[in-house]
Image (cartoon, rainbow, N blue to C red):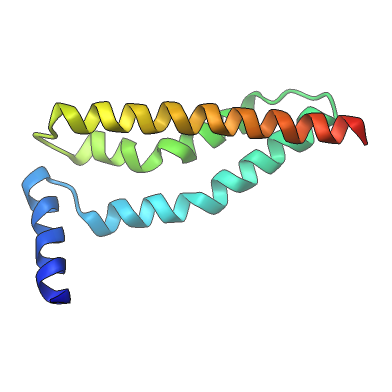
Length: 109
């Protein structure tokens, strides 16, 4: 059964020109870098310094797997792009909200 799931999973990658393991590796591998960027952003915001670079890095790590999909993928259905845009928008809103809470909590201390 696991073999048939793996074959189905790999067939999706072949159909769309994307290696699912590379996509997953980028997705999971970017998480620690994203978290470090957010921590750096909060630390710089608390210190009253510019947060442009950590914000840009956090954004890059947040969408890095989708950048791979955009570059390597082909014939990706429109609904996938709409779904990904919704996920990215929600994730960005959630991250901004949580980061602002962390900065505000630090300012109160």
